[in-house]
Image (cartoon, rainbow, N blue to C red; front, top):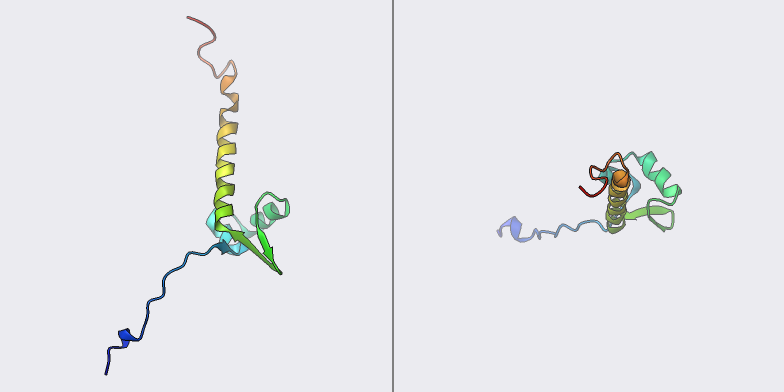
Length: 91
């Protein structure tokens, strides 16, 4: 009798291209209600196929990149203020 592993073929693991709302929320570290609120506000990109709402992984990554850049910009926005500047003129 042949080895049973001969008949079992390993299936490749395929990373999902898009996530359902619950999985997208988990991937982002947010609640499902926050994901839904951001989606309704047009801030979190999604794709609607029939009645399904999907969040493409590439779009989620871009969303996070944009949020990080905005946060960095906000953090350094006050850097030019007199309080944040040590050099007020030539020494």
